[in-house]
Image 1: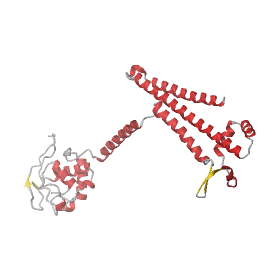
Image 2 (image 1 turned 180 degrees about the horizontal axis):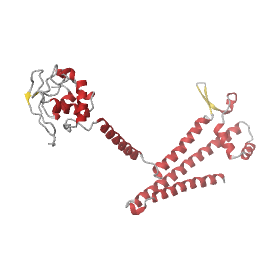
Image 3 (image 1 turned 90 degrees about the vertical axis):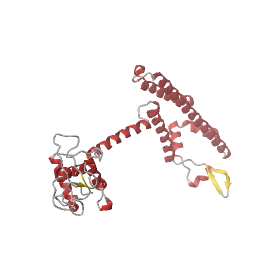
Length: 317
C-alpha cells in the first residue's frame, strides 16, 4: 500500500511538471510562432522522458532498499535476533521516525562489532556503517536542486539558457565598452580626428601643451630640444592626422615619448588643434627650421571658420 502511494506521488509530480510545461509553452500561442507545435511536441517528449527517468530512479532506489533490507534480516538471523518481533516493532514506528533514523543513525565505536563484516584484508576489517548524516542530507539537497534547476531553465523555459545569458552579458559588455569610449574619448583616433576651433577646446589644448610639451618646444612653440612649431617647415607632415599620430606614437629615436599612454585621445586632438590653430604660422624666433615646407589646414572638412596657418610639426617631429 505504501509503495503504491509513493508511486502515485511520483506520478503526480511528473504530471504537475508536464502541466506546467504545457501552460508555459502556451504563452504566445501558435499564431505568434509558426514552429509553435513542433517545439511544443519536442518539449512534451522531453518532459515525458524526465518522468520516465524519475520513475526509473525511484525503481532503482526501491530495489536497492529491498536488497539492503534482505541483507539486514539475514544478518539479524545470524545474530539470533527474532526477525518477526523485529519487523513487528519496526512496523509500529512511523515512516518519519524510520526516515530520521536512517538519516541520522551512527553506530558508536563500542558497538562497532555489530556492523562489522566477516571478511578481512591484511588485518583490516570493514564496517557496514552509515554515511555521515550531513553528507546524506547534502546529497538529497543536490538532487532536489537539480530537479528544480532543470525544470526551471530547460523544461518550463522560465529562466534564460546559458546561450541566452551569454548573449545578454555580451550586450551589456558592448554597452559598457561604448560608454567607456564615450567617456574617455576613445572614438577619436588619427583617422577620425578633426581640427577643433572652439576656444574652450583650444584653451584646454594650450594647458596640455604648456604642461607636457613646453619643456621641449618652449611655451610659445619656438622650439628647444624639439623642433620649432611656429614656422612653415614640418618633419612628419602638417595635417591634423599627422600631428595626432606623432603626439600619440611619439618619435622614440629623437627622444619624444608616445603620449597615448598618458593623454586621452580627445586630449591629443585638443593639443594637436592648438598647435595647428594657435602656434602654426606665428613664426616665432627660435630653433632653425627642420623638415619640408608645408601649408597646414586650420580646420578640416572646409568649415566657414577655416583659416590657413602654417607651422612646424608638433614637438614630436
